Structure formats: C-alpha cells, structure tokens
Amino acid sequence: MPRVRPLGWAVFWLALVLALVGRPAQAHPTPESRVWIDTTHEGLRLTLLMPLNRLEFAFKSDLTVEPEQVMRRHGQALAKYVLAHVSVRSGDQPWALEQPRLRVIGHDASADLEAVLELRAPSGANPRQGLLRYDAVTHEVMTHSVKVYLRSDWAGGRVAQVPRPLAELDSTHVQMPFDLPASSSPMKALAGLVEDGVMHIVQGTDHLLFLLTLLLVSPLVASGGRWTGARPARATLRHTAAVVTAFTVGHTVALVLGSSGWVQLPSALVELAVAATIAISALHVLKPMFKRGDVVMALVFGLVHGQAFSASLNGAGLRWQQHALALLAFNLGIELVQLAMVLVLTPLLWWVQSRHPRVGARLRQAMGLLVFGAALWWAHERWPGA
Image (cartoon, rainbow, N blue to C red; front, top):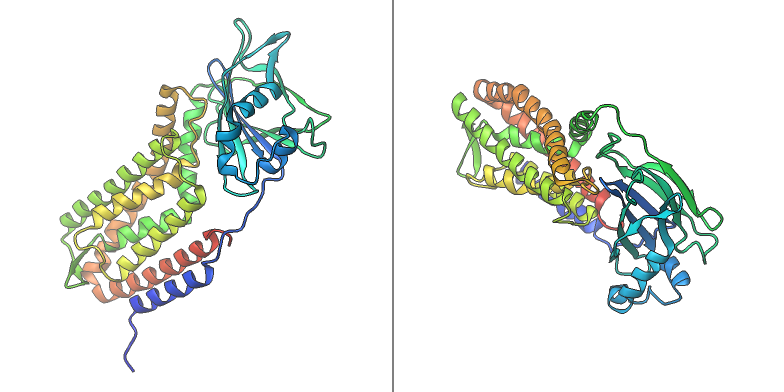
C-alpha cells in the first residue's frame, strides 16, 4: 500500500471539513437597538443600529419583505423619522443635527438599519455634557430596549477599547444625561493604543501561528517542489526581513483602509479568510506552494490580516491627526510583538535547520500539521451559520 504523505492527509482533511461545515447561513436577528457614541471635537457622532423587524411597527411600513429596497423606497422618510426621535440638548439649547447617513445591513427579516448622525454642541456649550433623548422604535414597541455604549473618546483616553455600556433606554426611560470627564494626560490614549496593539496580537493565536509559519520556512531553500536545505545566515536574515516587511506593509495598508472606513468587509468573511490564509501557509510549510513567492504571499495575506486588525481600531469621531496617531500607536504595538518573535525564533530555526536538518524537517512537518489542524478548526467555527 503506497504511503500517504502529510500533504495528502492535509488536503483530505481540508476537503472533509469543508464538506461537513458547508451549510447555508442562518439568520440571527438583533433583539434590541444599539447606540454607539463617539466623541468629536465639536460634539458627538452617534451610530444607531435598529432591527427592521422592530422598526417597521414604529415606522408603520413593511420593511422586512425586501430589505434591499428599503433605502430606495423609504430613505428620505426614514431620515426624517430618525431626526424626529433622536436629539441632544445642553440645558434649553438644542444641538445641531446633520442629515443622517443610512444603510441597511443584511438581506432578510433579520436585517438592521444603520444610521450615523453628527451632532454639534451650541456655541459656548460644553460638547462633553448634555442630555440625549432617544425614543426611536420604543415610542411604539413598548417591550423594545436600546443599549447605549461609549465607543471612542480621544479626550477621555478611550480609543480601540471594548465599548463601555452607558445606559439602557426603553419606552419609560427615553433620556440619558452624560458628562464625560477628560483625561488628565494627553498621552494616555496613545500609551493605551500601543498596549492594545500588543495585546491584540498576543491574544490572537491565529495571527501568531501565521507569523510562525512564515518564520519556519524563511531559512529554507525550495527546489524541485520540496524544501532542500538551509540558506546561509546572512541570506536567511535578508529573506526573513523581506517576508516580515511584506506582511507588515500588507496589514498596515489594510489597517489604514479598514479603520478609516474606506474599505469595509463583513467581519465574518474576514475571519474566515484569516483561517484560510493560515491553512494555505501551513500547507506551504509542508511543501513549497509558491516558487520564490514567499514575499508576495506575505504581502497578500497581510492585507487579509490587516482587515481583521482594523476591526479593533475604529476611527469614528477622530480628526485625521488623531486617527494617524492612533494608527501609528496601535501598529507599533503589533510590530513590537512581531519583532520579538523574529529576533527570538529566526536564529533558533536557522541553527536547527542548518545543523540538524532531520530534526528541523520533523519539527517543520509537525508544526505544519498542527497549524493546519488549528486552521481547519477555526474555519469550522467561523463558517457562516456554524
């Protein structure tokens, strides 16, 4: 009986898992409305998320039969509805509201309406104090609730953190006073962002394993469709620097585009794509799949991982100077962890591959199979409807 190589087993298990988990996505309707608050220099930016299957009762129109037609049919009326049911005041002075930006998220009865509103405090009023009044949906649906969160607040030292709950509104509680204290140190937000970048990649096992797969083959030379031996020390350093730099450039570009809102992809799709990149890179560890293409692979896959990073850094409410500093600090945290891994693992892996090639080959195959199995599990967990 012919011997089945590790790569053959890997492909077999990938096909089997994809066949088992490849089932249609199931809808998960949002049970309540949500409001995210981002502070700005002049006031607030509110991001509202309202389930269409609740909103249609208050709006008095069918919104769930064809959600993709909602904006064409009811866009202007929905904008007026939002403006009529959301307001902020400082004492007796109302804040100025700009026309909301609306879009429908989803394609079935579980779809949501997202509305983004810019609010400016009146002249002379404190833009960090006021009274929010919100009764969209709840003025008609008495059992509905609205959860309010503080998402980003540069002056308060809160950027790229888990949104902080502020209040829960309903039909009997439609007002929420707010008084946001400013941070005593302007560097607090930047220091927190560096720490967030470090923790994001340290706690992200998938990103760490992907970087590990890049480093595992950096000391190796591919020939005839297999890994044949180790590069010289200087060549290994140059090649490792090129691969890691390409990955850094890729995820930095995607981080800028994603956190700025210029490129927005469904988070579930991005997370599934991350698992796919790890699976492919693990197969590359087992057998060269890209002839002299490690750098290109790292660049392209870096774009995918950068989209996942951008979900942790929202630029809402920040001026462009603040957003640039936030990107720099968050990315610095990520790069510190990557640099530490490169400095520790590259010499060790080169020594093993050059001095003990058989041990290095076994280690590489074991790690490739381990990472490939982890990638399959993540793909299973992240598959739509799983």
